[in-house]
Length: 127
Image (cartoon, rainbow, N blue to C red; front, side, top):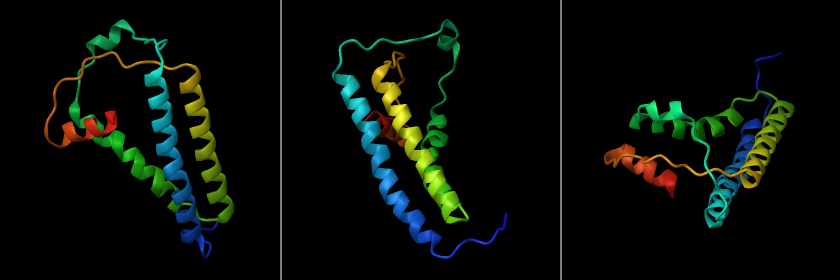
């Protein structure tokens, strides 16, 4: 495979990002909102999970997934590679949201009070 990037690919990648990013956040937000309206949502917690420490800094790599999502589109070298990757991201989002709507679970652990940047990031995630 050639390491030379096809011409005009940046523009196509940005178009894909402009389409996929709102879809990602809208579908994620809808699934969360819809599930919050339901009364039949359970939880699944294993005993060993209660012994896991809470590390506030882990929100940073979690949020960095959003950046990597966007950068992954810019890393493609060919039009075919870009379109295949974008359609895979779209398909993965459809599958994930569908599964969450069909089999929702509720977060049941108490999160400690946080302030500063970590507190802001967790609050933004909770919406």
